[in-house]
Image (cartoon, rainbow, N blue to C red):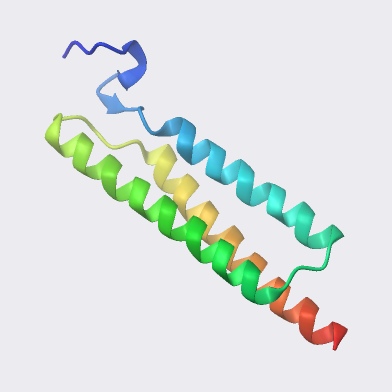
Length: 104
């Protein structure tokens, strides 16, 4: 299949949404540093974590729909990024609540 954008698909795999998943993973990893250095309200961390998880789940869903409509394979790398984002965010939420509880 020929696309306007060369990197839209590589070797029959949809690669269009690779950069947003990479950005979300880097953003999640940077939140580890922020949470270790600064005290954050656990409720704010819960909101941010849930927002990032929902955003990455929506991206995963959109990627699946696009891959299905274009008869391309879905990128397994993005699925692993999604799982890593969920694990990091859930860990950060738990850590924020534990850190807040110890502070009180």
